[in-house]
Image 1 (cartoon, helix red, strand yellow):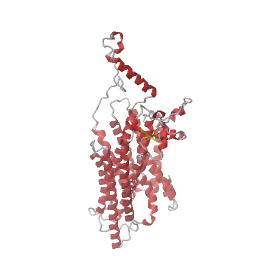
Image 2 (image 1 turned 180 degrees about the vertical axis):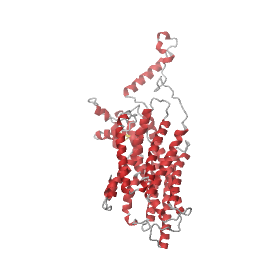
Image 3 (image 1 turned 60 degrees about the vertical axis):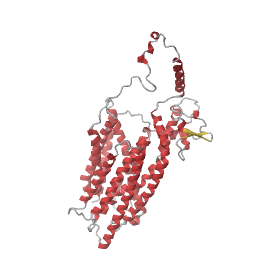
Image 4 (image 1 turned 90 degrees about the horizontal axis):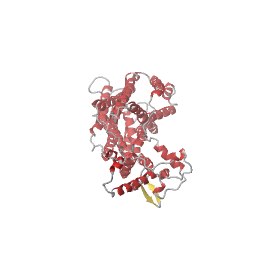
Length: 527
């Protein structure tokens, strides 16, 4: 609505405020798309197929991707083949109508949605912060018994310093989160007291999540490069010559986007082995992707320098007049951009799944989406900061300076990434313990004492004679023997089925097509 109002207004220069607000809203909605809407769709399919025990998680995820790609490709196809030929005012109006109709349709089907939800403790971050704030006046614990544990106390999750217990990992400015696990003498069993009590394992999970934030911030420059590839790379082709056909240079530019999208989706499929999914290999893969982003900016900078020299030499005034410089000069930067996107984005997903517990997946995906969508919003203020470099036409502008600035900025953030990766490696053991603690069953103090008594009883039972009259004790039948700690007697193995080739390959093809459609939309919009 804000974009439509800005396009409808006659004085565009006085309406930068609504454009900034609209761009921020679009970036915020886009970053929450995968973490909220796609998660909701996945849970609806899981609840709908709950009776089919043979359905594996991979098959359900594949079906979710199919439905997700159908909706995405349909919207991208409409944007390419219909909205590309209308004005910006009508485009924003059509988008506004479609979003309003989609919201009404979503609300109409509200009573048909499955109300059940899997217990993934997605609110654990909010719970820990709330509990720590409510206990901010308490002293730090001096012994492990003053803390609430989900299971038995683990010596590897804390250390003693200055007669105080310090929960690991150490996070600057967040030591006060340890107070969330401090036990308080119960005056009355109220729900509020139970809500403000967190376990040490939950605090550790949140602190492990916070240790990844410095690493995530190193991808801000990458998001700017990605946003630049969807905008200014297209503008560079305005004066270039198509050496293969007599048609518009857009035809070959579309082929560049096809190649870019192909690289973006084929590269992650090359790292299918377990060794390639090792966390250290993933970090190296992301670093190589960031190096490719630097080379991409350098290639775009050199192309723009050469293009501006040719325009100055030929004294071209019209931005649509072609020069002798071939459009193939843009091929290296599009290839490097595809390599960057394929290595960084897929590497981020793998790194995130390896280093964060399941209870943090929603929050982590949301933060990752925010970082990657950073360039979609902040590219506008960045352009305003160097407004003297941008004129009315691309021939009068200095995109070469902007590309060089991005290359320098990406190099600086690459150094930060290397430092953050090395610093973050020391938390690997604690993250593994945090994941194990999340899967462990809840054990109270009384249960621990009872377990000790049972172990003593079992050890004394071994010393009793074996010629006992077992007929008087039918409960000692071999069919009633316990099957081990934490294993239920009625546990049945789930039948296994091979993953369907269709469910595993169709999302890849449809995702590739969706990405290509979005690229084509950018090409058509610039016409």
